[in-house]
Length: 336
Length: 296
Image (cartoon, rainbow over all chains, first blue to last red; front, top):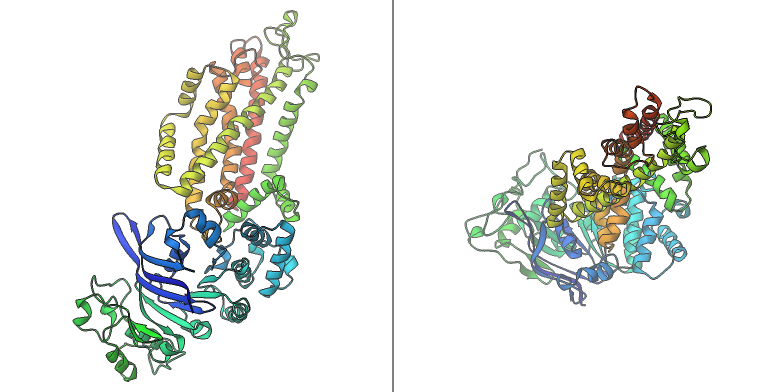
């Protein structure tokens, strides 16, 4: 199957006051058609920057330095701003944002906002757009859609608004939806409902999804494929099954270890010590926090290697990592 | 958060004028009217505008007609506000002055409002060199004392009402630009703007459709206060002789004419001065009312 989206060695940097922050520093990622791909990593690892680079909606200080973003065979970096606006954004790739309460304009009713998107990308009139919008509202299980159509965002609950933004994201039948932590700002029960509905919907429409989150539970539940990101680089990627059952990168392992759902802790919950800010200039970026590091890790830049067909990692010592995952003394200290 | 609510109240009331009928929008207009400050202010300015529009019908005399035999008559039945040195009816002149005051507010403040909003939008949204250019222009205009700069501009263009409007606009758009720019800088970081970009809206659409309604509220408040300032400014300019020229019944010009006659005919300068006071109080009350709602 052809890849719908292929990101090759993407580098996106932010510049300001003479310093350069390498938010994304070598990311490779591919999404096939009708596939739900998870992108997981801690805060500040560059997940959202990848999403913004895809749509080219980076803040002024940020720019894509190198790498390719191939969407349906077209290099997104080479498109003009006009082509991005009319062909890609909202039409081919749409985005769902983290906090629903602020991702809609507070001054317009949700109906006005969704019809404006429909009218922008499809050649339809107000009436047609309205019936279509109400249909979409019904599809995302908004109760009483005719009435909600005339509500302002502040009159709706967080869950309702996230449904509205999902409806907006799906309104123009895109090929790819980027979901940037869409359930993070919601409480657990609502997040669960929305996840269920979202799962059904993407099955129905047959759209690919790039699901950005730091919740491993969500990844395990809805994704086919997972990418683990650390400090702007992809550390491990593979099908959800292989990565979750057989994590080969110590970072992935640490992430999974610190999640009580997967490894029942005895006593303190293991954590990955240190901070994301400690990044060596050369070699493995995870080096300062890694339990199995040695001098070899800093010698050269480490490439993403294929372990088998559905699994690749950026680590030179997968055997040690494997041993680590089996050992009782897992190398991660418990603090809580 | 409250700021946004109040902002939406005001801009929705603007939407009311241009947008479709909506009950929620009527509610917000009611809210403005319910505030005692803005209600009194709106009534006062409403009366002023009506008087201005219907001046030719309300005024019982021609403001320019000189009846030298009736010179310097004190207020009485036939001339409620008395007459001036040339026998012109002061009341008629004050009434016609109301229209000029309204025009100064609408044109002077209107131009400043539009230029300021556009310039502020451009510099706040795009930043970079556009921002630098616009903000340095603003800085250099604001480096001069307000009155001195207006007088200098009037000296270049020559006195007259038309030039007065533009001189006022040229000087006072800076404040609007600064207010709008600061709003845009914070507002454009909001997620809904990113969301609007992500669905493929053009810059123009984002600026005018999304950011402007969300950042126009403080400039509306400022505009209502600015009206009061501009009335005073226009009157001062006419008083020192670079604004409206006699015999135009501009209030400031009338005060200037009546100044020398204060001992023989106090009414000539007093009634136009009361007109200025009334207008300034009216606009200030509206501004206070709107600001109350913005800060509540």
